[in-house]
Length: 589
Image (cartoon, rainbow, N blue to C red; front, side, top):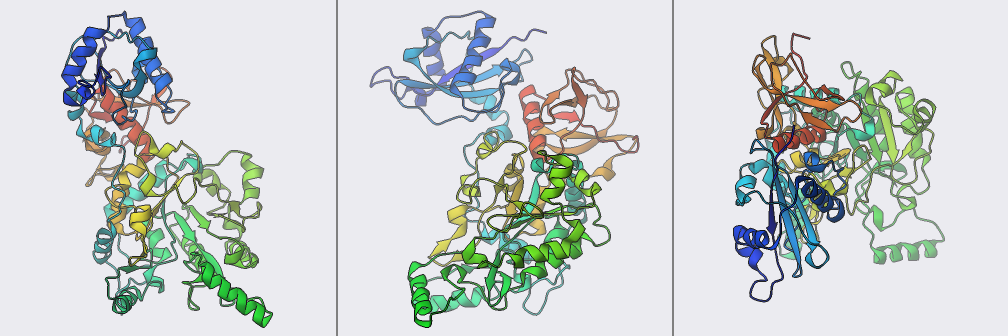
C-alpha cells in the first residue's frame, strides 16, 4: 500500500547575511517558506532517497535505516553555526497521525536540497501532540544532583522493625505486595534472554549500609566538623539503608562489594581516596622501623569493626538457598581495587567465594564448557544448578571460578551525570555489559557525590530502564525508589487482572505501562520479529485479543524488559497507536 508522505523541513540557522543570520530562531513558518521558495519539487522515489541520505550521511545514530518506515527517534541537536542549517523532518503518513522525527546538519554549499513539500504547517503542533515523546527527546535528564532529601524521605517512609538507633533489622523491610509481585514478574519475563541483555536492578556498594553499622556516626561527625570549622557540614557516608538480605528481598539482583585487607582481615570498607602527603608519612615510618606496614591513604575510612568479607558471602548464600528463592540468580561485582586494597591477600577474597558458594557458582569454566563464547540465559544457568555469579574489577578474577569484570565504561563515565536518554542511551548497545549508577556520599564542602556523579532517583530511573543498561546501581535503595522500576504493569494491574474476559494491552500514552481491557475490544497487535527480539511492529489490522494478525516474519508477542518495552512504545507513537494487545494470556491459556 502506497503512503503519501508530508515532509516538513525546519531550518535552524541560514547564512543569508548579517540581517538574517538568526532567522531560524524567529519563526519556524517564515524559515520554511524561505526554504520552499528556494528548492524545487521531486518525485517520490527521489524524495525517499533524499531522506535516506539525510539519515545515513549526517546522523551518527547507530540505528539501522529502512527508508521512511523505520526512520525513528534520532536525537535533535542544538542550533548550528552560520553557513549550515539544521533539518527537522516530520514524516506524516496518509492517515495524518504517524510521523518520525529526524535531526541532522547539512552544508548548503555542498548539496542542492530537493525535497517535495506537500504543505506548510507549524511542526510544533505535531511535537506538542505527544508530550511524552517530546520529553524523551531532550538531551539530558534529571541527574539526581539534589536527590538526597528524596531518598532520605523514602527511608523514613519504609515499614520495618527498627532497632534502638532507628535502623531496620535484617530481613524486616516490608515491600508493597503489588510492587513485589510486579518486580518478580518482570524478572520472569526475561529469563530466556542472555544475561548480558538483562536489566539487573542493583545497588552501589551494597555492603555499606546503615543497618550493618556503616555510617552510624554520620550526623554526629557532621556536627563535630561544623563546630571545628564554623561552617555547615552535610555528611553522608553510608550508601545504603538496608542489609543485603533486605536489598535482595526488595528485588535487587546485582550487588557490589569492596573488600579491603585491614586490621589483619579482609573486610568490607568504603575507601579509596589517595593523599600523597599521608603516604609519605607512612613511607617514612616504614623506613624508620625497617618494616612494611599494610596501610596507606587509600584505606582511610576503614574501621576495625567493619564487616568481614566472608560474612557478606555467607549472607548471599543463605538468601539464595532459602525456600522460595530456588529460581533466583544473583550477580555480584567484587570491587578489588588492586594491591593497595588486598595487599596480596587475594586468597582471602577467592577462597570464601569458592568455599561458601560451592556448586551454586556459575563460573568461567561452566561458561566455556557449556556455552562457549555466548552468554547463557538465567534459565540455562539455573538448569546447571548455579545461582550466583561473581565478577572482579581488578585482581581477584581467576578465569576458573570468578569472572573478570565485563561492565563498561569506566566509573568516570558510567554515572547518571553523563547518561543521555533513549534513543542515544549514552551510546550503550543491546546485550553488552553496561553499568550506570551514581554517588550518594557527601563530605561537607570537600566532596558532593550527587553533584559530581549524579544519583538514581525516582524521576530518572524510568529513563535508565528505557535503555540497554545491564546493571542499574541505586544508592540508598528503598521500596519507594524500587517503585520507579516497575516498567510493565500500571499501578493496580497485574497478571491477576487477566481472565477469560480481560486481556493485556500496552498503553503508550502512559509511559508504555500495561493494563487489562475487555478481550473483545478491537485493537492492533504487538508483533515481535522472529529473529530479532528488539524489532517490533504494529499490526496493520485490528481485532479482539485472541485473533492476532502480524506481518510476515513477525509473531504476536510482548516486550520482556524496559528497553524493549520502550522500543515498542516509540513504534506505537510513530504509528499513532495508543493501545495494542500484548501476548500475555489470562485463564484462556
